Image 1 (tube, one colour):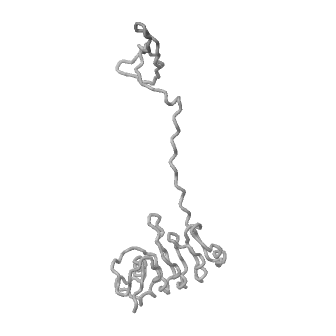
Image 2 (cartoon, rainbow, N blue to C red; image 1 turned 90 degrees about the vertical axis):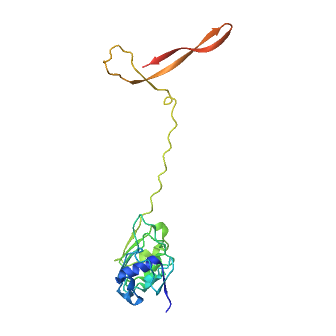
Image 3 (cartoon, rainbow, N blue to C red; image 1 turned 180 degrees about the vertical axis):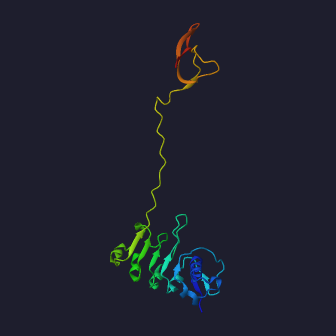
Length: 213
């Protein structure tokens, strides 16, 4: 008997759905009805399986599966499935969640006669959306919202000439100060340049400062 090729996550999901643990065999697949646990609980592959990343075709062997929910956790990386054609063999499937996977071709949904609910990725990721209009009225389709646009950091405006004015803190010279308390308030200053003469050659020097409180 050829080994069944399966992605490690797919095989773990099957083993968890069968509820027989490591002793699971292909003869137990008919026990699986709800498949929603895609975690690496069982690290060791059974003798009848061969690990092939991205191969989820083993799910198509679950003839009684009525619910298939891929992980829908925003904090988890989307599961990458090489081929979703295995869904066409899941004739009893009623509920399907592939919102956070790389699912894209909606035409396969027409091959699921008992489907009543499906959760799909954002519309921008999908093809053959026109088939959704052909689904029976009892079916309900939801779409994952597209990711929000990245928020760009706001650029700081250039300071104006007024904002560039120098500000200092000075102690007021008013004689009516309360003993033991010093009041600090902002004031601006301006230096005044005057010309002075040293012998014959004139030059510039700071002669005074004007304070405005």
